[in-house]
Length: 283
Image (tube, rainbow, N blue to C red; front, side, top):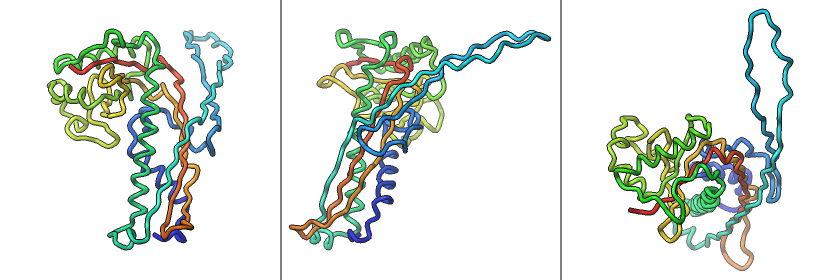
């Protein structure tokens, strides 16, 4: 693909689509992404309007209902404070000797790299779960086994139940070793659903204890200990991102084409009660 035929808007859209297909923590269904498309650059602020509880009252036959109550709303800001870029070149000699489009394949690698940075960023939001939703601690981490890993997911679900978090659409992100323990538990492998019989996209590997289970190497840990296994509901975190710039250019001092791009994003924990965290060591 020559630089002259490069259309930035199309490549930006393709890059963002490829990025979303690879996301684990930042995929729709794990975080709330309804604010995407509202940002243009790093430093932008997305305003999120909360609606408080609505009063439910008894209705009595032939008695007037109360006047409509005024909605209790609150405004919070999601700041787009993260920016990651890429800039690569494709030498004319390499391009001539390659079968296929090197730039297109390199863009795929760029999408993967950008995704990985965003996932690592979101994996750090475990620290904002409410204190009542913590299972284990840095001082006394849990040590899951093949017999107890599933039960610990159940315990996370109970914490969310007690916080009045909806039971539908819950998710949990686990490291590969924890997933391996689940595979040794017949309660996980014998569920008999398509989602437990095949590996799905975006890291999803099945269902257990009321959660969509996703596997990721980006779970935060301390040198292989104190893994911060997060579970929750999409209402917990709002996330917005945008590929704001993709530019192709001809390198002046080389016989090479080059592509550079800028990805900006931000996230905010909106409902900390909808996150639960298990601090765990490998058994």
